Length: 295
Ligand SMILES: Nc1nc2c(c(=O)[nH]1)N[C@@H](CN(C=O)c1ccc(C(=O)N[C@@H](CCC(=O)O)C(=O)O)cc1)CN2
Ligand SMILES: [Mg+2]
Image (cartoon, rainbow, N blue to C red; front, side, top):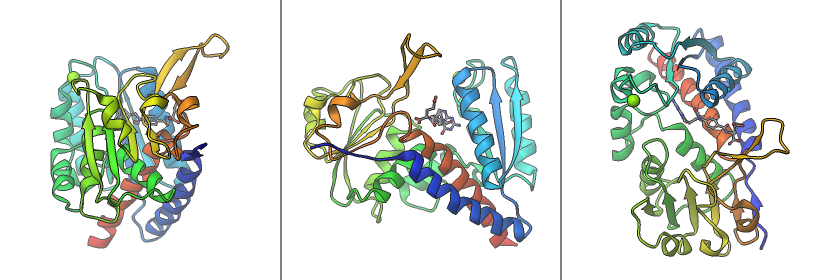
């Protein structure tokens, strides 16, 4: 079997058209969706994600306030900026790009964002609401993964899912979202991590594998069940002299071999990545919609 490639770029671009239409309707009603984008430091990957987020806002008619802070910005300065945006009626979403420099307490920063503007879905109030199944801003990467699966016709109801990785950004939230009693849940989920014994035995049983482990070739063809759906969340730079940049991007899955056995597979790049930014736009428009509804 050769897998159907789940084209994240195509699904993201379809969703961005829907988001653009909704943003235009809200702007017409006097509530143009607005996102504050905050980057502390000069990490090259973060700079490129933040540029992509700002460009995506512009393309969808979302106002963005772009804030680049130097790496020696104090925690107090960052908290003061967040507080300003919490009070700014033009801003419906606040995004602080992670990771933050080591001298800044990430937990404290996430807690400072008004949960009603927490379009990353990282504030404990939104995390808690998600876990108990209340309406909440859902974190962008896991929410994007659900969209990829649903829009590709992969059945979630009753599926055996194995999540590899237990990060707060991907592993823990996707596991929670998939066990919810809902149209986009009702799956049976196992979460594997660095201390899991016999990870391959778990993966072999899975109808859906979500690989967010943080290392190339963590999931290989011998571990995968014939016909399984494989979602690759990894973004790893491996040296490649044939590329201008001197590296190429690979995921956590051995794509070339696994695609011969899987039913569905996401590529890297062009799978999950484009959906992360799309769901940020989606949440920002959703936040502006709540403000418009309350008027
Ligand atoms: N505040 C946040 N910080 C971080 C998040 C997040 O959701 N909110 N997620 C990641 C980084 N991230 C977005 O911020 C992100 C990662 C990857 C991509 C993406 O489009 N990847 C492309 C490849 C891009 C490349 O060429 O380097 C792909 O996979 O196709 C977008 C956003 C950590 N921080
Ligand atoms: Mg820190």
